[in-house]
Image (cartoon, rainbow, N blue to C red; front, side, top):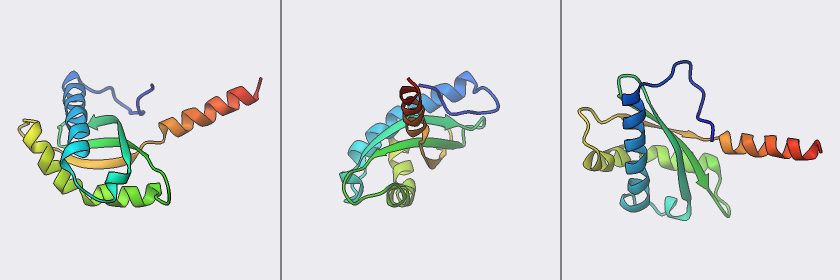
Length: 123
């Protein structure tokens, strides 16, 4: 899968920390955060991009939502839990500075699906 566009290539340190944070975040969201709204949603963390100073982690999420829930409500809920998630993450990942977590709705899967539909329709 293609990663999200950026003007510069990430350093090996950024990539390593991003992958470590991604794995830990997956566990935190699954096992450590107890929110009635989020328990109804399966969350895919597709990528974590770190800033060069490692102080901000941009987390690309894809919620698998069913029923009456929508992406906007999901993003409000997950963003409100960011401090709690960051605290739980700090217990799992040992870094000099725990990055600020910024959640972003991942649209790359949706874009790939639309492109696939266009390609199939063109046959």
